[in-house]
Length: 115
Length: 151
Image (cartoon, rainbow over all chains, first blue to last red; front, top):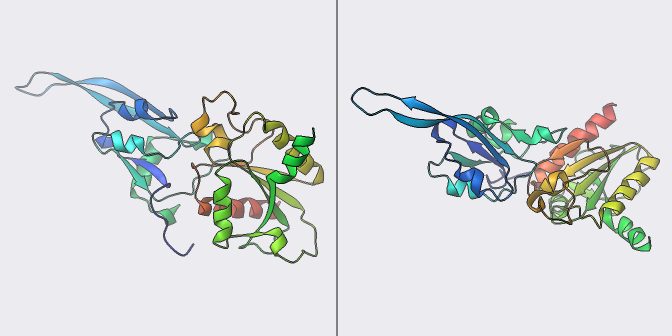
């Protein structure tokens, strides 16, 4: 191709540190292609009441199901999901299309030509 | 059944990869739904060439890549299965599942009349997208054609 592909219909990348495991994307996804695991953790700071936060364990997008509608990106209150231009991530097995937190985070830094 | 005879031939478009003009691998496009438009888009940009638009090759193709692009309804599934069986009789076939529908049913994952992806024959490669970009099709075709040429 002569022109650089637009990030649309590329890939959805994750900023793991921005994700609060609120599950909004998981619930809004029309094809239920997002899987999210988290656990609550107590945070105690001096002079403050202890509070509980969710810590992200695993975030997976099954690109064999994803319809690239971008609803997850729209609903994320913390902008933890983003369009990225990479389009070239085929798999030899069906389960190989399910991408984990590390891969989703890797896409954040990558451009289309890196893959 | 007669209706399937009709459908089987209509399903197929034979392509050649512009970047591999001498590959003796033919690309069969089984366009079942909107993903097939991306195959056409690849042709519109010159990445794929329609077989009949080219002079006949001196040697017959030795291998085939079957690109299943689109939603597999249960009504069409037997036709697709037969198409694959016919291709297998002619020589080695590698199947590419192009897009979410051919892979898992995609947006129609809970539709009662849609198959949850290709299930009647083995798939060599799954290309993700809804639909995938034409560049993704061509990149994966190149990889498949090269691997078949090396084999």
